[in-house]
Length: 151
Image (cartoon, rainbow, N blue to C red):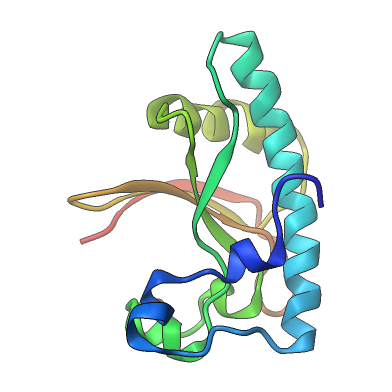
């Protein structure tokens, strides 16, 4: 776990604001540790991309990671969201190069052969992020990559 931590993936401004417990049970903590290995792999590949394209600071910010059922409900997450099982994270590049970050996932990372469930380029009226789902709750990986507009 070179670049990400369990505590980082469990940090939630919504949980803090609403005083909701967002501590994962032991089984989900294990899932988070597995997901972090995948996120570290993404960070390594993003670092190579940044170096090749002259982009500074290849750090990645987690805008949403693990969500307890209460936090997931509070943010309007899907009832089956992989976030609840420790298998998903919403990511943004620390260097602010969101267009390049999205391009990296679609044109480079999704084609490297690494196993994943979903890579979704998500956009709302006020924000953009890349949702990375490592696995579904049942452990399957669909290898799906697509764009989604969120209202």
